[in-house]
Length: 300
Image (cartoon, rainbow, N blue to C red):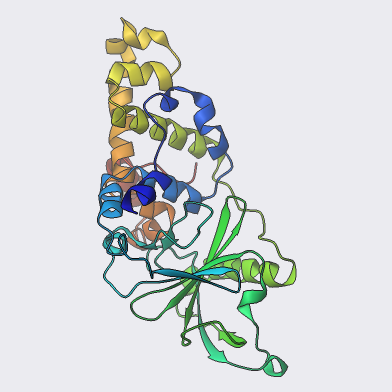
């Protein structure tokens, strides 16, 4: 079982990283999708997949009303990486982020309520792909439309077998914009059976992140820094005299930043954790912090 989970989240192979077309589909992704791409390259994530407490159990998941229901009553090593589960979507290799790591997860409180009193049967959405119940009994619902996903965290009920009414408390005005996006997604799912188009990362930031991912994939595949430079900069001069002139420091910087994003949990900044750490900093201090951190930015 563990081998199957690891293979589901594998990154490009020893030769695939050499080709630009391998990364062509990443353009137009939003920040949540980018965070998952970096997470997949994390050595800690790959180790955790091999030691999941659920890897040898057969009673982890059941199909109810055509929807995959997964339950975990143990401490999962993925939680240290900001992830709740990686087995909720049987069709796509998708992770469930913990609400504390990803402010784009909409958290609501639920209570049983008949339809005449505003109750909603959450099983009715065709884009609902899986339900996950954590050790603390919190329910996580995963919705997917093609490569785009949305996650809803539901407190107060142990299952979604009956209609429920949802409530949400606005406790942090700094995250209100993220909450609005979540409500837009929820409305579109249950009234239009779709997910609104994701807001992609700026083109410049996307190019930088693709370059970093490709460089890190090359490093994992065993390529030298010169070979990586020749591929990501599309210049064979990096293999000869041009290496010392300009490519050495640029390639080292790209790889250093990529390691920060993957193994240094820099991907959490793409999910919004960076905004928390930067709260209260002056523009000058924020700029200095960005220069010294060495991480990729989700914005241009």
